Length: 331
Image 1: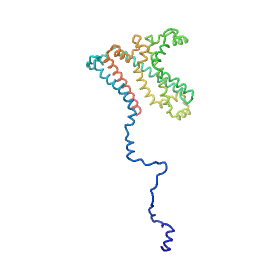
Image 2: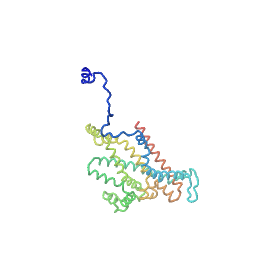
Image 3: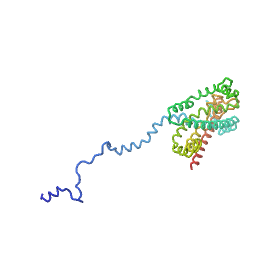
Image 4: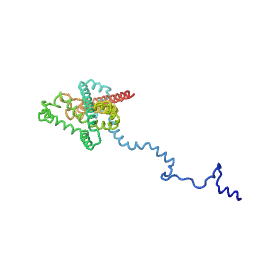
């Protein structure tokens, strides 16, 4: 090598020239990245679509066996004259005609609508009031909420027996004693045809309002607090803030609660059955008690199944109608 070559080698590669290819091992991945996942394993993990259904399978099997199969059996029975041990006889729509032409069923349907409207409006109004009063993050509020929610978790049989004691028709009854303090005479409550429906309605409102309260509290947490501050700065009163800020923010919650409360009102049975069993003189007879008496007490299972199907269709129409009304309002 000449002296000129030695000088070029010491100076390094010339400007604009391509550096020689680097030899040696390839650059390694940064620390913490882990080994690369093979494409075959990645595709296998992404293809486990059946994993959620595996966890849902026990609940779906229970629903299928205890709910959907009995519903299908009830639909079939509604077109038959059920004769245990003798075989069922197909009668077509005769059971539905019997139910719809029955005076008792029509009166029970009217009582059901009145009871559903009263319980729905009362429980939603009382639930919203309780939610507005108990909104916050204090420790005492948590205890008060838990105490207010107790009627929901207490068994309905206990609730009915509790209100039966309070509705005792004598002067020394609990509620009659309170009415006597303010100058009102004793009332018969569930023993009086004029007040029995209102008494059952109050029981349903007392039990359903805490459930609505908890859903309203969840909805109030999503309302923008800045709107309250802006309305307060503009001089809006508390009632105006509730009307123009709270209620529009709870529109979706109100729709859901209306559907749930209406279905709960249409399917009312246990409190009526335990408190009055449709009496006195049929003043509290509802659709569910009529279905129970036709199907189990009179052993007319086909007619009772037809009534149950009609109640299901009414509930379905109500749900779909409210959903379509809400969609049209959003558009």
